[in-house]
Image 1 (cartoon, protein in one colour):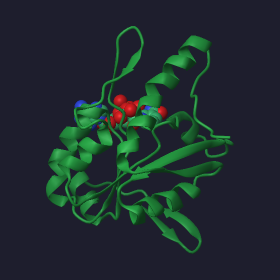
Image 2 (cartoon, protein in one colour):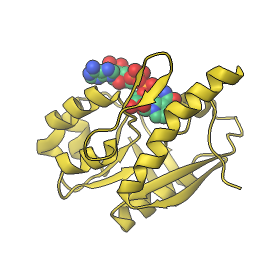
Image 3 (cartoon, rainbow, N blue to C red):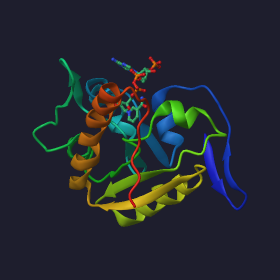
Amino acid sequence: MCQLTDRGLECRIDGTSNKEAVEKADVVVISVPYEAGLELIECLRPVLKNQIVISLVVPMKKNKWFEYTPPEEGCAALRIQRMLPGVKVVSAYHNLSYRKLCNLDLEIDADVVICSDDNDAKQVVMDLTREIHSVRPLDGGPLKESRMIESLTPFLINMAIRNGLSDLGVKFV
Ligand SMILES: NC(=O)c1ccc[n+]([C@@H]2O[C@H](COP(=O)([O-])OP(=O)(O)OC[C@H]3O[C@@H](n4cnc5c(N)ncnc54)[C@H](OP(=O)(O)O)[C@@H]3O)[C@@H](O)[C@H]2O)c1
């Protein structure tokens, strides 16, 4: 559980069920593979009401290379918003490698594009993102723009493989 205070982000780790955690939370992060994420959201629907829901989910499959496989809504974030009418869905962190986030001393030096149809919720997530060392949040516009950042993820993974690189991110200059 994390709280944004005057002293910055303060975190504590507790164990509980997904439902109970969501009931107590102001901000919920959906960080599971796409299909599992939809099942999880379906289960959590009764307790998802006033929270901000951050999706970093990327629907993709691997044939020879990774391929973006958006749902008919256009992107995962819009699909999730359709499942959760009235909930403030924010799309972020799709292009940030977990390996980089795990290393708290690392200069990540990357941008995080954040999209939402709810500007207040987007600001909350931009403020939270500023708490991550050396990451810059950028307003990416409405939720439908999430398609752009979601589709970048398989492209970055393919480019990393092609060029013998790893954990590529995005920086706008
Ligand atoms: N990896 C990255 O660097 C990265 C970066 C940006 C965005 N993303 C996106 O973030 C999401 C998660 O990626 P990931 O690499 O963290 O995936 P992952 O390691 O395969 O899965 C993350 C967690 O999701 C849960 N999970 C997996 N399959 C499940 C299922 N069928 N039912 C219920 N829970 C399940 C598991 O939780 P338990 O351990 O509790 O079982 C697992 O620890 C994906 O949509 C991905 O596109 C990933």
